[in-house]
Image (cartoon, rainbow, N blue to C red; front, side, top):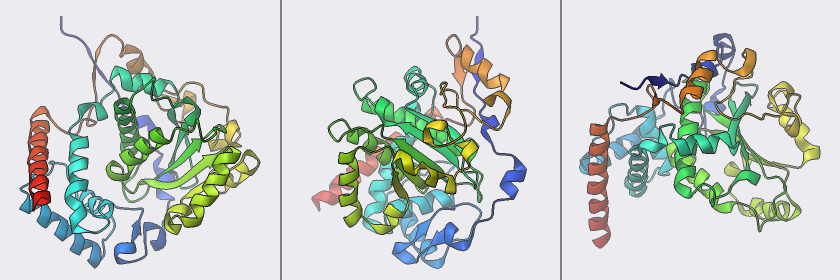
Length: 339
């Protein structure tokens, strides 16, 4: 008997059209600064400047030189993001592209595997609400981070899968292309602070979700973390630090400058009840937070085959091609290193 298939449909996460239509970005939000100092938040349905186009052409020359066949769904914005990840330097492009294509070729980064779902059910990472420009809010509870419970590979797989869901269903090209990230440190001291796990999350986002971060809140820091943060802030890049804000509980009111109180849980100074069910992702703007369709699908996952429509980026044949290209790229890199 053929096993019934279940489709996980996350369309219910999409913002309503009237809210999207009300979003207006000024030019400095879309892109600020020039040439290699450029910073960009909006990548789709907007013009690129002459310098960006020049660097995109340089990137494509490297792709051609190394005989790399990019995935069929590759876009100009993908190229530009690789250019930004490579810091506009030719010598960095091959390494960045190699890393990204390798990530694309791992099926577990895009599928609801048992381990991915187990991870997401824990509430280590989840979404709740949107800011005043309809950017989705992602929360990470650092107290629950434990690399002994879920290893590094699972963290990469689960975060990639979840971020992919949010990007596909909560973003709107040209309007909403960023998220707000809240890291609740739970007053963890430096000895217990999960630096390695944060490094994994950061590395996953930097290349594979380039340009998605609008703001990062580090909440409820311990005294030792606050002291260390002051030292880091004094020497860190000013543009990077502009996106990061560390707040103690008595300072949470500052979050409401960007996020309405009804879009925040009570634990972060908002008026909405703290979430206790973390999977599937919730949309607090619809009755009950979920559609009946997604709840039935999630309930069926234990006994049926799961199919993700448009979530898996490549067919088996495409994956084999990617793996072959990655191998060739590695050989080419090794040859260049020998030179």
